[in-house]
Length: 142
Image (tube, helix red, strand yellow):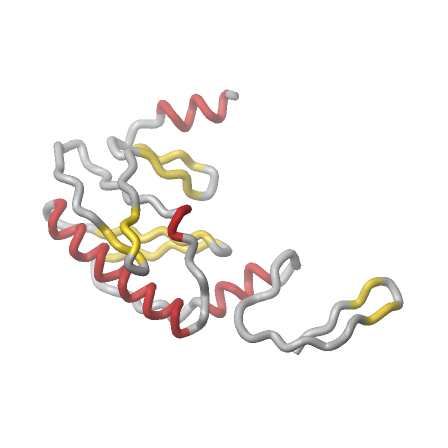
């Protein structure tokens, strides 16, 4: 339950069905508490800041890393469905950080293929698949 106060006026009480209130000081901390039970896996790092989440899968080859990534994606999808958190698949990208030529393995999130990209933006950093900083430096100079 929640109610909004504006100056001395109170609005009617509403029921919060799921989620965390946005646009307040505690929103980020509450979201982290809300999502702290995302399942952890070996050789998978799940990096979260506020509502930005990155999955980092490590493998001996791209097929192994993609398989682990898909498994982590499925685990996160199950967790977010249980907590009624909506993931915006259109803001998601799949990047494989390697110097080798690779075949792009399709990764799905909520039955939607995550588009492959050579670049990803995370917490203001522009990350390149070949681990080069040219694009990041170019954007920061602007």
